[in-house]
Length: 290
Image (cartoon, rainbow, N blue to C red; front, side):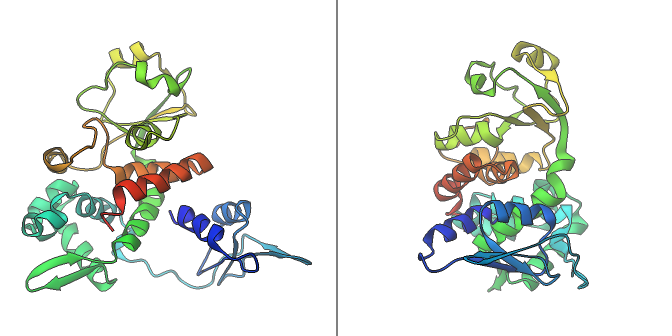
């Protein structure tokens, strides 16, 4: 989730300077992504990528002997709750009526989680410096970092589990000619990003819905394909959250998911064109959340 920001930092480096990423552990897939972007790194396990005139170091695949401390933010319920908190349009406009300051049952319903999960997640947010108690009211802080944490955990813990079907179509670029989405479905991914930024020409389509009607699938000409360019993901949020979006989201298409989710969808693609669109989406819609 931090790759777009890292690429921006690389471009800002002076000619005689370079960026070095240091982390507790960088796995093989992330190491490959950083190497492809010529971003130097090293971690506590001994993995490293360093390159300079007369120097080339490439070590990958070493496992750290340091036991990872797992907090409640690494659970699926935390991903859902943080998403509900960040995308609540009342978070800053009407803080007293926001989900963050609502009874547990209301937050749990909007996030689509059990009530018992809410208290643990709020405690973890508080202990990690993301949540402050101010005169009896809660406030989210360090939101830019929280967005990065959320996107990372969503991609690692939840997104793949939400994929229920994949299809193949001739070209997603013809999506404007497709029938309107059913009322129970919303665009995500590249199609939603194209609508929100006007920048990207979609090559894949992401639809969030419990199920696409057979009639719609036939009219579009979709064929089942495990590696297809059209993916269907099951929504993980509650209807109460959608009602909040609908009542307060100005200028956002009603048939698209929240820009925060579109941002994460783009990062999952790991392509330059999607990374650039993710930056535009962040600047246009998410910076106000940070």
